[in-house]
Image (cartoon, rainbow, N blue to C red; front, side):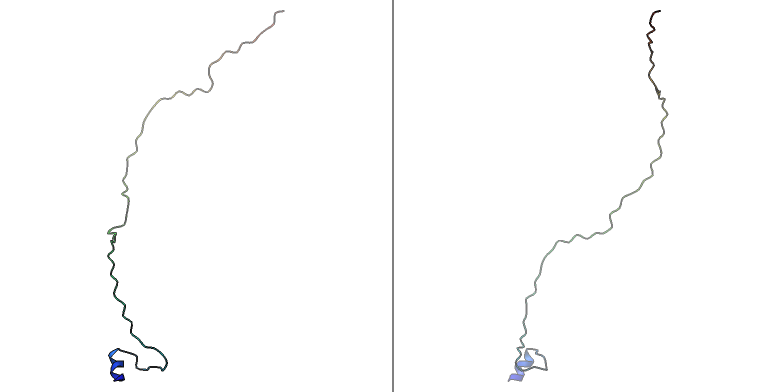
Length: 75
């Protein structure tokens, strides 16, 4: 009868005396998760923009116009 119970529980064939052999069955754990799958990698579209030229006239003043007064003493 002991042999019948041992084979019924799928115990190892080389049992050692003094050790406990028990099959523990844990229930399956199911978890629902929302997963985001990336279909294509992110990228930026490059476009060629033609150059824009402008012509304008600019006046550059190096020094403001001025008059210098010099005091000459009377003789």
